[in-house]
Length: 148
Image 1 (cartoon, rainbow, N blue to C red):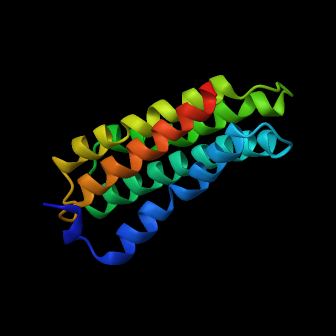
Image 2 (cartoon, rainbow, N blue to C red):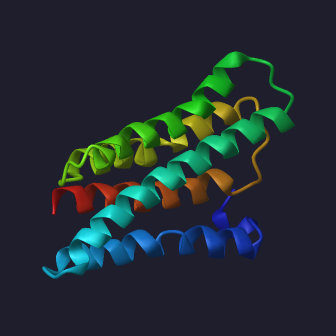
């Protein structure tokens, strides 16, 4: 049950999904005009990925024939969290730190949902390990961007 048991494309593209946040972190560490663009991009990227995870959970539950409303309710929450985290931008607030933390924490802890689903959904071998790597990387970088 190692990551290497997965086909190469999910590993490659999954880990490549960490690059946008890594670039944003590098730009935020520089004190230049790209800093604010990187803060906004990091916030939007985190919200986008969080919403993507909800869709993944929804489809996994559907394909497994789950009828419990709990799984579908949990699958909708990431999109709602993302929207709530982006609303301060719509109100014109300039510092995204709280939004980035509000996105980074659920990203970091999202494998807990994968594990809960694993009791009812058949994930591919190695999937949970890859998810833990991706979630830890994206969650930690998002929180780092918030506190820098």
